[in-house]
Length: 149
Image (cartoon, rainbow, N blue to C red; front, top):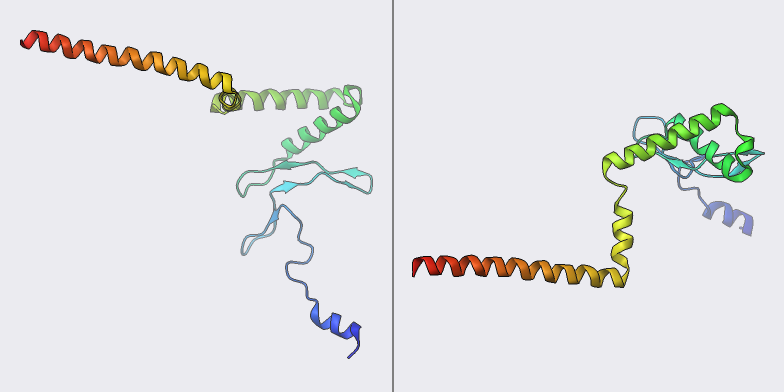
């Protein structure tokens, strides 16, 4: 047996032929795009966006992301009025949804807490507030003891 036959008999393809990264396939259904990678394929650019848990990316999000990439790469003069308007509208809606869902401030809090000087400030405030609370409880207990005595 020569080398070519050994290699032909040893190598095997494991997986689904033609399957792409970011595309999931559930049993009994067709593939569903969960994310699209950024690539240049034969002069056409693909857009990087991602859907939710087992949800495809909506066409509006893909268009907005494509316009955003075009804006970043070539400037606002390369976009049409419609593309600019759609992008601005999409960005405004995303900001409003983030604000309403309460996820906007999490990054600020995480950044704030990661700085050592801020941690010391928080510790000082916590000690002051704790001291006030203990003093209130002791004052109530002393007042209750004075009333019963």
